[in-house]
Amino acid sequence: MEIFTLRDEHIRLGQLLKAVGFVESGVDAKDVILQGMVQVNGETVYQRGKKCYDGDIIDLDGQQVTVRSKMNGQEEHGKS
Image (cartoon, rainbow, N blue to C red; front, side):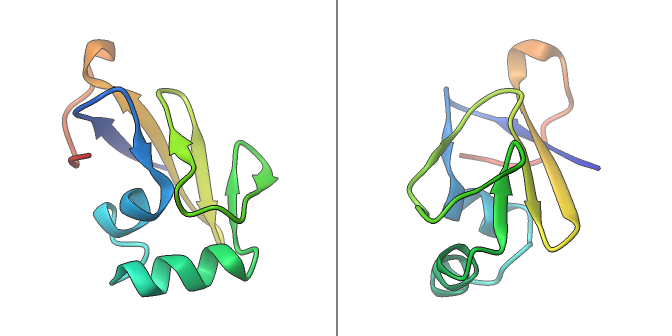
């Protein structure tokens, strides 16, 4: 499972999907979210603006990423 390190308190779901390379663009992020292909903490979400926080687990078609804050001592992978 991939780790994404927050720079701020949260990151919006569409931005996160782009930042970790699950999608190539904001349009692609919107499409997969509206199609019900994305889960946050096991629940299907349909809002690309959903805020993702430390500890959230995002799943897109079997690809998973865990969101961590810098304060957890994790190595930084992405930006919010």
